[in-house]
Length: 523
Image (cartoon, rainbow, N blue to C red; front, side, top):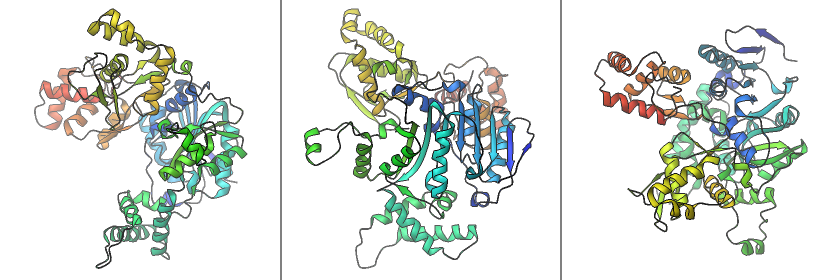
């Protein structure tokens, strides 16, 4: 058994285990923030399927394979009413997680250097996260992970498990086996990594002098070349890196009393059939055969990675996403109208686009007004229950009360609109109000997490649990100074002094507005 003892820490509880050093101690793998793993996302999807999940602001979260806490610590900082436990079998990143949590004064997170196979009782959790774990461990550890999800998950809890999938994993496997062949016999990790990257670069550019070769694997090598070195080392050079057919993963989960809930990105799920008769004629599964339909969708798109949500097999789910499930949620979107000025006239088609490139066109006054309302509020959400009244008010101002009344959507029509936009990745839904503000106060305050991260580099985790880049030095300097003690005039003076050049009022306002749009302000 692993010997565990308690070490006091000023902010975060920390359990350290005497473990054999792993490759993750030798070549560090800094973890990122993954918005799909956030309790708000997990609670939202559970709510849509008629579960009763724990609220994000008062929940218990376990992350298995937490690394250096890059995903867990921002959650714990933003949700002080919840508790978090991260475990990892590599001691070096756990020590880094402790240092980071302690520096921020985060007291509601605990870290343990612990082999999952040796783990005793861990407690009960509303949300369990295992990102980048399942495909990279041997079968006994995979089985242990699913067993822990079953035994530790609350009755209405949700487990997030990501893994490589087939058939897309076949291309990745070719790259992996090629690199393992090329680097066989090299024991030093850094030398092995160097030789692998050199070979990847060579293959990505290689061409036959005479024969024209169409090789899809070459494209895969080009993708591999773009990965950070530590990702290449732990993915493509790893001793274990398996890809699974979705139905096989779902069957493994089923053997442990777990069932498929959804994908963490709901838009990644199989869409309704466009031609039911043709699909039935060629033997494609019907909509109600969820698992087989998901598997066929993977085959059609040559899928290579999934972020799957699981819940207890006894949990009753309503996969129709009923209208009532939306009422307690909040909705947001960063969409904007392509046409300026936008018209709410019935039948006048407007095209809307999001920052990620999603597009939707509509001539319905209600839908147009709703999207304009959400786009102007971004990143702040609106309560779903209040959105119809907000739309009515906008329509009345432009078209009059009678026209507004005619344009309103009923309960089922309103829910259908939200369902279509959400499954199309055009809007976001949330289970809890955000922790950021969008109005600029007299004494602006950026999150302590963002201030610390931007003091060390150009990116930070915002209060939407996504990473944002702050590329200009004025913006970074200003955010590090926004601790709530300076008014706008003092901020401008201190920022100018720190940069050694004058920052005008317009430049200050621009930086503040950017920080607000990036969900970095708490006051």
